[in-house]
Length: 279
Image 1 (cartoon, rainbow, N blue to C red):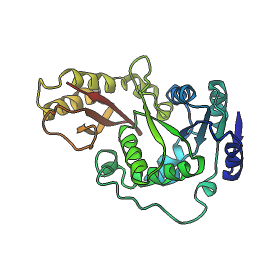
Image 2: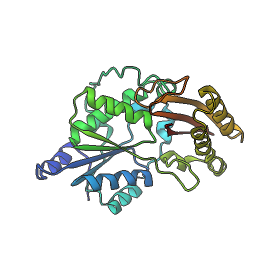
Image 3: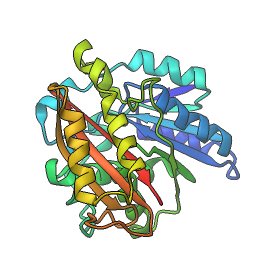
Image 4: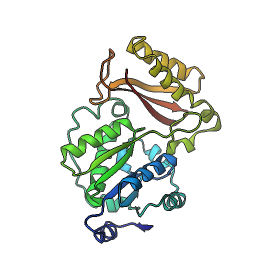
C-alpha cells in the first residue's frame, strides 16, 4: 500500500498504471469504521486499483467546534486500509487540496436546501467543492459512497451529471452495529449513556417503515419523534419523508421510491440515519 501526501506523487503513481486499469475511489474523512471498510471491499470487487483519500474537509463544517472535535485516527486508519487491501492512500493537507482561492459555483437546484442543508447552511457547497477537486485529482472510473449520507449521495450524483464527470457513482448499503445504530465516525464521541439509547433511532425508523400507508405521513413523522425523544436523552433536529429521486418533502404517500431521513442530537453529538420506504 502506498501512502502519499501530494497531488504530484499521487498522479505519478496512478499514471504509471496500465491505461486499461479500472480505478476505484473511496473518499473519506478518516476515523474509519467497518462501514468505510465495506466501501473498500466493494471497490476491490469492481476495480483493479483502489484509492482512498483521508481528508477532513474544513469547507463543509459550518460549526468550527465540530471541525475541531472531528475524530482523527490516521495510524489506525492506515492499518485498516492495509488490511483491506487498499492500493493507494491519499492524505493531503488543506493547502494541497485548496492551493488557491478559486471555488466552484454550482446550482444544486434545491437539493441542498432541505434536511441537512436547512440546518447546516453551506455544508453541501463544501462537499461538492472537495469531491469535485478530488475527482479531478484521482480521475477514477468508479467512486463509492455510503447510503447513510443519503442526501450527500444524491447531490454527488447530481454534481457528476452536471459537470460531466465520466465517473460512475456506486451507493453502498448502510452498515449497522448489532443493535441497529448506523456506523459513523461520530459514534466514538458518544457518552456511554447516549450510546445505550441511540439504537432507538433505527427502531423508530423501522417502525415507521412498517406503517407506510397505514397512517398519514405527518402522523408517522410525529410518532417517530415521540419514540426517539421518549428516553429524554435524544433530541430530533428534523425528520422528513422525501421522494428518493427529487428529495422533495412528501405530505402524502406516493407509488415511487421514498426515504425517511432523520437527524438526532445525542447530547452534543449529531447522528443521521435513513431508511428506504417502498410499498
